[in-house]
Image (cartoon, rainbow, N blue to C red; front, side):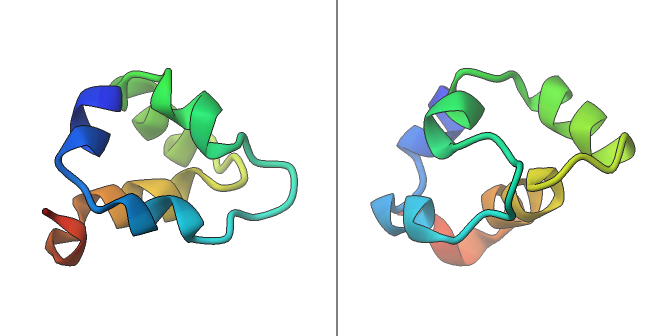
Length: 60
């Protein structure tokens, strides 16, 4: 996911994440497949991160 974050605005990391979710540094070390698996497992914060990374408004 660190490759994806390179093409996103830095302000994306200011988005609040739900309690109990990994922080942005932990998310940046994950693969997209891990994000998708977290969404499917309904883990906290994963849906928000996937939505933000998929949103074209945060592209550079």
